[in-house]
Length: 135
Image (cartoon, rainbow, N blue to C red; front, side, top):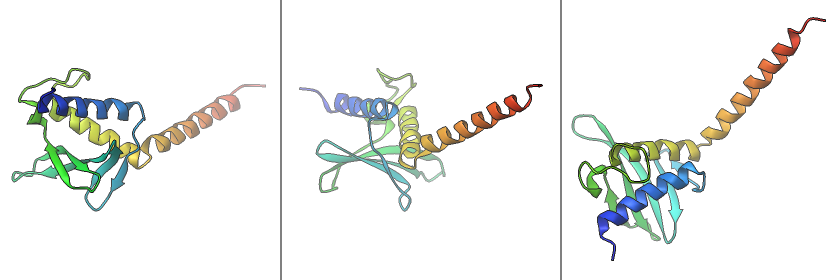
């Protein structure tokens, strides 16, 4: 049987890797500034909140199919100073911040927008280079 810290670690790392691969469909909720996806028989939410000092932190909420909270996962949920096995992050706090940024970018179509901008800029560059060719 796998202990709960190992399950949490595997879940967070798998979410990161599958998001990086573009295999998770994230949605964004502006009212809660959170990202959400459906996985298996439940849901994952990635939220960002501030503490009493005004410092922001990211955490993951695991929900069942009725959207009841099963678990809140913080960077320390896998043990303090624990380094992820399958990602280059120094700890799970850093991993979850990156995961949230990727999820939000995916949910609001950020990659598609950037790709279209780069395509337009590259097309303009090619057109400019062609205009500079002497006859």
